[in-house]
Structures are given as structure tokens and as C-alpha cells.
Amino acid sequence: MGDHESSADSCLFCARCAAELHPGRGDFYIIRIEALADPTPPDLSAEDLHRDHREQIERLVRAMRELSERELMDQVYRRFTFHLCGTCYRDWVENPAG
Image (tube, rainbow, N blue to C red; front, top):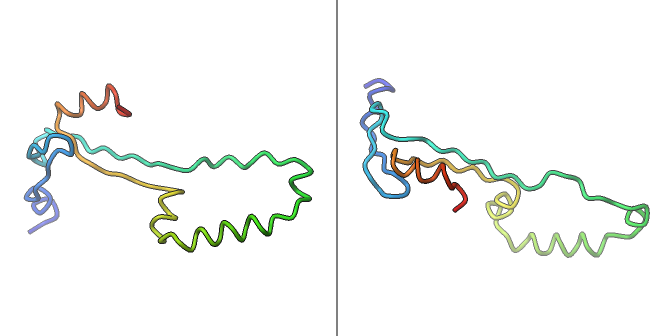
């Protein structure tokens, strides 16, 4: 069985309404979303640069020890992939955040 055949045989469902989707029929959309933490460096003053930050760093490290690797990574980067049928896609694309 080739790669095309195996992907056509796999079951997919709409993430919103659970309708069955059929690869190769053009009846669905693949949605990919990347969420990234704000990469802008903090605005530091000369006073900030001369301050001793050890206590704050130690507090952050202690707090990070309580989190799993996955939880830590989710605070920085997350990627989502889901499928939507045509009807759900039209609703979603008009208001993706709502």
C-alpha cells in the first residue's frame, strides 16, 4: 500500500462538529496555528542593569522546578493542527478567536 492510499483510508473528523472528513474529496480544511511568546526584549534602564537579580532568578528557577518540560515549553511555543469541514471552516474563518 502506497503513502497516498494509506492517507486516503485514514479516518478524519471535523474538530468542531465531528463530521467525517474524506481526504482527496476537497471537503475539509487543515488549520495550523503557531502560538509564540512575545519575543520582544524587556525595556531595561541603567538602574535595572546594576541591580542584583539573584533572588529573582532563584525564585524563577524554584517555580520552574514545579513545572513539567511540556508546561515550560507551552509557555514559549505551541503548535496546533486540526481539521474543519467546509461549513465549520466558513464560520471559524469569520471569527477565529471567538
